[in-house]
Length: 337
Image: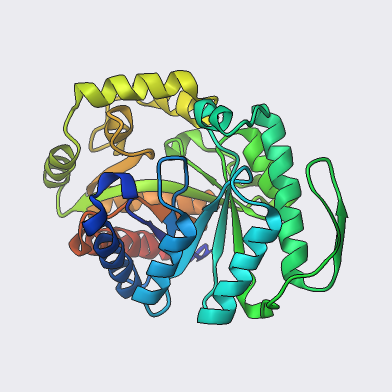
């Protein structure tokens, strides 16, 4: 999508395996991937954590179900060596001729990391992520690689098959903290964060920083209609609120704490920023809710702040992607005007 401020790329989000029975999960991934592909999205985010199926297997499902959609695969350094990640990217390129995007994650749940025997502190995990990503990039560029770092060391290591230059992966770093943004800047990647309301995001993309945001959207022909849809899809859930509170206690995530503060401001037609799904443990990103015009206005403000990548939450159906497209189209026209 092109706006007056430059091109904007849209990514969808893939369903999570823990929310579906095994017999239906594969079919659901294929459905959502096809919807996003037909809607012209650039790619689709595939999560990873200790409770989910392997994201690379899901990426294969996505590629085999679509014509051009690119998997955005979450990569956690604790799970795989950098060589394994580089080889997966090159193998997908060799077999399918499809580009892969990488979403580098440091990990937020201390419980999951400790279960894996990883006791590295928050800031140091991003230092490790920078080193990990740098080694992946060097391997994908080809030739024999020697690397001596704090966390990884290789000697005269080469990658096969060789990755064609036009399939070199786009690289994102997931993290709303300053450590996450700094890590993305250090490796020339796009920092992906959960955004504050636009008026709170001054200076978001200063100093040439590339920033993307993860956000859900419910847009309809009127504010009342949109809010009815949103509250029906994400009703208040006491059990979810308790789970959310427990998750806050075991996470050292910057965005968990920061988003909670912005949830204290009541949403309205003038303030379409809504944290209801986040607070009820139904999803992990803010939502923009309102008429097409209202949501488009908020999207246009993010674009004016320098946002060039939007990762939209898991769509419940193909129709929802169409409603989202209307809001983005109006945002693009608003910027041009």
